[in-house]
Length: 119
Image 1 (cartoon, helix red, strand yellow):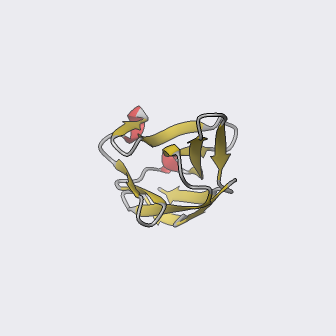
Image 2: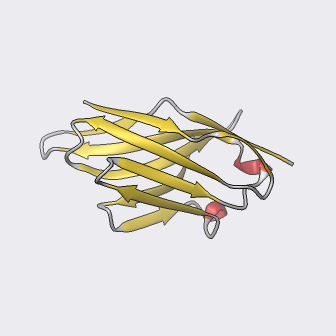
């Protein structure tokens, strides 16, 4: 079992910055992928950014050049640095992780943190 706890959300003006953090606890070995999704009101949850095996990163097109995902294995934490925020970035942001022990692959989710960008 893996437990994910997000923090760092809040209210910010357009053009501002926020940094989200997600701390993993429990059976944290074999977390081969960690990332961030978001869900705006009335929309489907979408991938924002993900880091795969600590080396490869993938970003949703609208956040490229503005958001940076990073992972610190010494702290069991994945970060999402969000710069030049826009009102359309407003959403609940969820931390997400895939665990694979060679027998089962399980996806875990955090409880979400609200990000609101005012115009």
